[in-house]
Length: 103
Length: 112
Image (cartoon, rainbow over all chains, first blue to last red; front, side, top):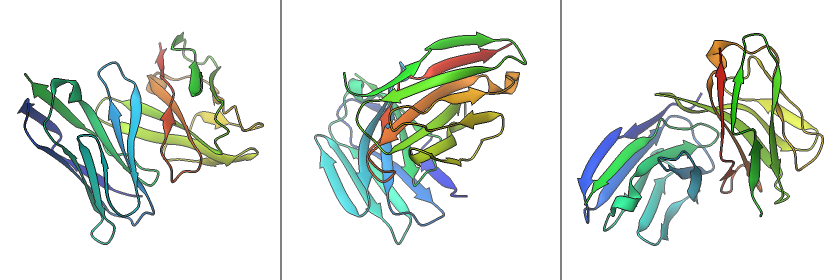
């Protein structure tokens, strides 16, 4: 079983701050997903990574397959970024990071 | 509208009752999967399918059955509902398991 650890579990930040969420896992995988779950419950796929780095708007995701580690960064954070961010290496899901961005 | 459709959105069952949660997608995705989400536990994989006629167990399969007779549909059956199955259930699909998921809007199930 792939043990997935996300950190931090909870994060409150001010609008405009640079946000980093980390994900470590124990079993090698071919692809890792980052998901976003809004307070209403809907889940959206943000990235699928198998190597290197991807960028979409203010979101950047990186992965180091050898180190079994991935990070999600949010630049110029905004209150609408408030959500739960979930890391999913392979078929396993982390418990999520609860992010609140205050105006 | 293209996407994953889950029905019903809400359901209350009595202990011992059976029911089927429906999941349908119109994107011709091969991979479909069911998850349950409980407070503090995150998403846990129940069953998944890599194509019509092929299903496999995930992390928490006990008490649930699935079948995949068509590419579009992947129903989840609760055989004899128990209070421990009270949860929010999500269905998802992707072209393969290694590409981005599309999630359904979820089914909130309460077993009393």
